[in-house]
Length: 194
Image 1 (cartoon, rainbow, N blue to C red):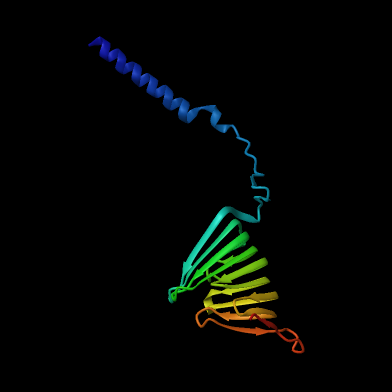
Image 2: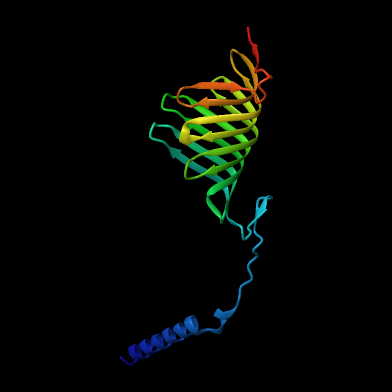
């Protein structure tokens, strides 16, 4: 019986010692130096202005008409002063419409608004839908209006021909496009395929 009492007393003393060293140790005041210049890829450093840097970012949305929207980027930056805006690099988007059509957009950069799903694409843009391709420098995807505004060096290449214009507005649901030039004296250039 004395042996049990000695073991119990020893365990209580060890417990008190562990408690003391865990909560009252002087080591807790040591400051650990953390490198605040964390590199994400080769691209950026966290700063006071940037709240998040996200690699392989993915945003998904739908609307009440059954349109599915998915946006992917190799890198997305979110700033403290604009938490609903993502500045993205190497971007691809897929818009799946309720009628089965799919519109794919690729670009070097984009700015995405998480509240409206509106996106401004910039640099080396390629838009594909079925057998149709459009290249341009800028594209605004305005999901709230079901509209795609394509501008600056617009070239359309499809089964029926080649079109060059300054700007194209596409109604996503009606599948209708309006092409126009900024200067009223210039004309949209059309070349039909045989």
